[in-house]
Length: 291
Ligand SMILES: NC(=O)c1ccc[n+]([C@@H]2O[C@H](COP(=O)([O-])OP(=O)(O)OC[C@H]3O[C@@H](n4cnc5c(N)ncnc54)[C@H](OP(=O)(O)O)[C@@H]3O)[C@@H](O)[C@H]2O)c1
Image (cartoon, rainbow, N blue to C red):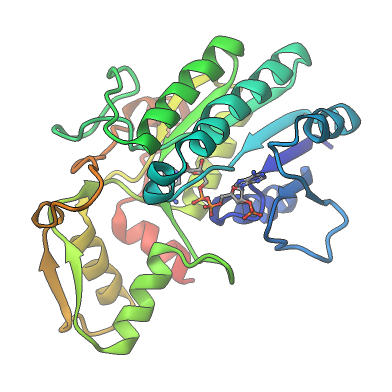
């Protein structure tokens, strides 16, 4: 049985990944820092990854076959407020994992983002040079480079996902459901575009590229480019909620906000060629988390 060590195992993606990879037969060890999600699991490990000696101790004791890094400082606002923390989590820490896995012939899977460009075009390819515009994007872009320099056999996954949240962390789709149930006026941006994919599909596709022993950068995203408004509207329709209280708003109308790419959509041609599957459209993705 392959030993898989997941960092960020208490996060939105990492907690689903912990359950998914266990289900398909991996021996999973799931690391959290502040939020224990699986208190009854013997393989849940508490570690602040800024503790270098604790980290080396864990890696050398466990000697994992695969390391999946789902940790990060995922709020764009928090990254602007704490750039040193963002730099450590998105650059220094992944670089350490890439070095460790390169020296120990284990596989490193690095979860990156779609937040890597200025957002003036659509459907970014793996080969498009990055041009990030905020601390989150800049540190994530630099982290990818460091990872692939240290360990070119790493898998770098660029994505944007949604799924059911956690008791400590509401997801975007949880927020949408809450707003729809409240029957109060709320807003969705119609000028921010992306290609979201549900967590179940993301994990299935990630496992396929892992099985094929792929390396390098892969976009794992949905096939359909939607605005945030469109996503919410589709969600409401599929859940048979009224969207009468949903109104259109524009991100650019709020100049006080942190710069964000207005288009983060990803091209998935490389992924489709590798795994022989077309990624889900938005309806298929949403349905996969409603079941
Ligand atoms: N959410 C999205 O839609 C999205 C989109 C594109 C890319 N991504 C990328 O996908 C990855 C996962 O995102 P997510 O939304 O699932 O993350 P999340 O829910 O915000 O969780 C972040 C995780 O990082 C862990 N962490 C943070 N600082 C730590 C530290 N010092 N030591 C140990 N663990 C630490 C947290 O542990 P504790 O909570 O236990 O402290 C938590 O498990 C990230 O790399 C993110 O950049 C996310």
